[in-house]
Image (cartoon, rainbow, N blue to C red):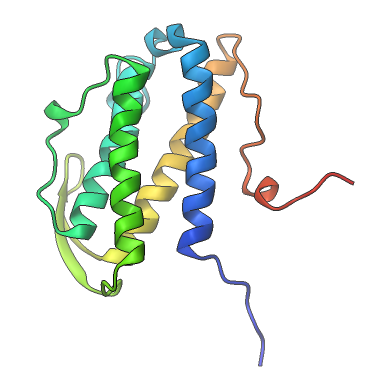
Length: 165
Protein backbone atom coordinates (compact mmCIF):
# COMPACT_ATOMS: atom_id res chain seq x y z
CA UNK A 1 0.00 0.00 0.00
CA UNK A 2 1.28 3.45 -0.92
CA UNK A 3 0.93 6.03 1.81
CA UNK A 4 0.43 9.68 1.14
CA UNK A 5 1.25 12.65 3.34
CA UNK A 6 -1.75 14.18 5.05
CA UNK A 7 -2.32 17.92 5.18
CA UNK A 8 -4.65 18.53 8.10
CA UNK A 9 -6.98 21.35 9.03
CA UNK A 10 -4.63 22.12 11.92
CA UNK A 11 -1.74 22.43 9.45
CA UNK A 12 -3.82 24.84 7.38
CA UNK A 13 -4.89 26.92 10.38
CA UNK A 14 -1.29 27.19 11.57
CA UNK A 15 -0.12 28.50 8.18
CA UNK A 16 -3.12 30.83 7.92
CA UNK A 17 -2.49 32.29 11.38
CA UNK A 18 1.27 32.64 10.82
CA UNK A 19 0.60 34.48 7.57
CA UNK A 20 -2.11 36.72 9.03
CA UNK A 21 0.05 37.55 12.05
CA UNK A 22 2.90 38.64 9.78
CA UNK A 23 0.58 40.91 7.81
CA UNK A 24 -1.01 42.35 10.95
CA UNK A 25 2.44 43.28 12.34
CA UNK A 26 3.61 44.77 9.04
CA UNK A 27 0.45 46.85 8.68
CA UNK A 28 0.61 48.07 12.28
CA UNK A 29 4.14 49.30 11.57
CA UNK A 30 3.18 50.74 8.16
CA UNK A 31 -0.51 51.72 8.24
CA UNK A 32 0.00 53.90 5.17
CA UNK A 33 0.01 50.64 3.16
CA UNK A 34 -3.78 50.54 3.61
CA UNK A 35 -4.11 53.55 1.29
CA UNK A 36 -2.06 52.06 -1.56
CA UNK A 37 -4.11 51.63 -4.75
CA UNK A 38 -5.21 48.07 -5.44
CA UNK A 39 -7.58 46.66 -8.04
CA UNK A 40 -7.41 42.97 -7.05
CA UNK A 41 -10.89 41.48 -6.49
CA UNK A 42 -12.51 44.71 -7.72
CA UNK A 43 -11.14 46.74 -4.81
CA UNK A 44 -9.85 50.31 -4.75
CA UNK A 45 -7.05 50.17 -2.19
CA UNK A 46 -5.26 47.74 0.13
CA UNK A 47 -7.70 48.34 3.00
CA UNK A 48 -10.61 47.46 0.72
CA UNK A 49 -8.72 44.37 -0.50
CA UNK A 50 -8.11 43.29 3.10
CA UNK A 51 -11.82 43.71 3.76
CA UNK A 52 -12.41 41.23 0.93
CA UNK A 53 -9.94 38.76 2.47
CA UNK A 54 -11.39 38.88 5.98
CA UNK A 55 -14.99 39.03 4.75
CA UNK A 56 -14.54 35.71 2.96
CA UNK A 57 -12.94 34.26 6.09
CA UNK A 58 -15.78 35.41 8.29
CA UNK A 59 -18.62 34.51 5.93
CA UNK A 60 -17.22 31.00 5.34
CA UNK A 61 -16.68 30.48 9.07
CA UNK A 62 -20.24 31.62 9.77
CA UNK A 63 -21.58 29.20 7.15
CA UNK A 64 -19.59 26.34 8.69
CA UNK A 65 -20.97 26.89 12.20
CA UNK A 66 -24.50 27.63 10.96
CA UNK A 67 -24.64 31.35 11.78
CA UNK A 68 -26.18 34.04 9.60
CA UNK A 69 -23.59 35.59 7.29
CA UNK A 70 -22.38 39.08 8.03
CA UNK A 71 -23.04 41.52 5.21
CA UNK A 72 -20.00 43.00 3.49
CA UNK A 73 -21.43 46.41 4.39
CA UNK A 74 -20.98 45.51 8.07
CA UNK A 75 -17.32 44.53 7.76
CA UNK A 76 -15.18 47.59 8.52
CA UNK A 77 -11.84 48.28 6.85
CA UNK A 78 -10.98 51.72 8.14
CA UNK A 79 -8.05 50.56 10.28
CA UNK A 80 -5.68 47.66 10.83
CA UNK A 81 -7.46 46.97 14.13
CA UNK A 82 -10.89 46.81 12.50
CA UNK A 83 -9.71 44.55 9.70
CA UNK A 84 -8.02 42.10 12.03
CA UNK A 85 -10.91 42.13 14.50
CA UNK A 86 -12.93 40.54 11.69
CA UNK A 87 -10.12 38.06 11.05
CA UNK A 88 -10.06 37.20 14.76
CA UNK A 89 -13.83 36.57 14.74
CA UNK A 90 -13.42 34.21 11.79
CA UNK A 91 -10.48 32.41 13.40
CA UNK A 92 -12.46 31.86 16.59
CA UNK A 93 -15.31 30.34 14.58
CA UNK A 94 -12.93 28.09 12.60
CA UNK A 95 -11.38 26.87 15.85
CA UNK A 96 -14.83 26.36 17.37
CA UNK A 97 -15.80 24.24 14.37
CA UNK A 98 -12.58 22.21 14.49
CA UNK A 99 -13.12 21.48 18.20
CA UNK A 100 -16.72 20.38 17.66
CA UNK A 101 -18.08 17.17 16.26
CA UNK A 102 -19.55 18.64 13.09
CA UNK A 103 -19.83 16.51 9.98
CA UNK A 104 -17.27 18.03 7.61
CA UNK A 105 -18.84 16.14 4.70
CA UNK A 106 -22.19 17.90 5.25
CA UNK A 107 -23.21 19.86 2.15
CA UNK A 108 -24.57 23.38 2.52
CA UNK A 109 -25.99 25.96 0.15
CA UNK A 110 -24.20 29.27 -0.17
CA UNK A 111 -24.10 32.37 -2.35
CA UNK A 112 -21.15 34.53 -3.29
CA UNK A 113 -21.11 38.05 -4.69
CA UNK A 114 -19.35 37.00 -7.89
CA UNK A 115 -20.51 33.48 -8.75
CA UNK A 116 -23.96 33.31 -7.21
CA UNK A 117 -25.48 30.23 -5.60
CA UNK A 118 -23.67 26.96 -5.03
CA UNK A 119 -23.34 23.92 -2.80
CA UNK A 120 -20.23 22.63 -1.05
CA UNK A 121 -19.19 20.50 1.89
CA UNK A 122 -18.14 22.18 5.11
CA UNK A 123 -14.65 20.77 4.49
CA UNK A 124 -14.51 22.45 1.08
CA UNK A 125 -15.78 25.71 2.58
CA UNK A 126 -13.10 25.57 5.30
CA UNK A 127 -10.17 24.92 2.99
CA UNK A 128 -11.45 27.46 0.47
CA UNK A 129 -11.44 30.19 3.12
CA UNK A 130 -7.94 29.35 4.33
CA UNK A 131 -6.38 29.08 0.87
CA UNK A 132 -8.30 32.12 -0.40
CA UNK A 133 -6.58 34.20 2.28
CA UNK A 134 -3.16 32.70 1.62
CA UNK A 135 -3.51 33.25 -2.14
CA UNK A 136 -4.58 36.87 -1.76
CA UNK A 137 -1.85 37.60 0.78
CA UNK A 138 0.66 36.41 -1.84
CA UNK A 139 -0.85 38.86 -4.32
CA UNK A 140 -0.62 41.58 -1.69
CA UNK A 141 3.06 40.81 -1.12
CA UNK A 142 3.75 41.45 -4.80
CA UNK A 143 1.76 44.67 -4.74
CA UNK A 144 3.52 46.13 -1.71
CA UNK A 145 6.96 45.21 -3.10
CA UNK A 146 6.09 47.35 -6.13
CA UNK A 147 5.68 50.24 -3.67
CA UNK A 148 8.96 49.64 -1.84
CA UNK A 149 7.73 47.58 1.13
CA UNK A 150 8.82 44.06 2.01
CA UNK A 151 7.62 41.33 4.31
CA UNK A 152 10.06 40.12 6.95
CA UNK A 153 8.84 36.54 7.35
CA UNK A 154 8.98 33.54 5.00
CA UNK A 155 5.45 33.13 3.66
CA UNK A 156 5.82 29.77 1.92
CA UNK A 157 4.42 26.69 3.63
CA UNK A 158 7.88 25.12 3.34
CA UNK A 159 9.02 27.28 6.23
CA UNK A 160 6.30 26.08 8.60
CA UNK A 161 8.48 23.08 9.38
CA UNK A 162 11.84 23.70 7.77
CA UNK A 163 14.99 24.49 9.65
CA UNK A 164 18.05 26.20 8.30
CA UNK A 165 21.03 23.96 7.61
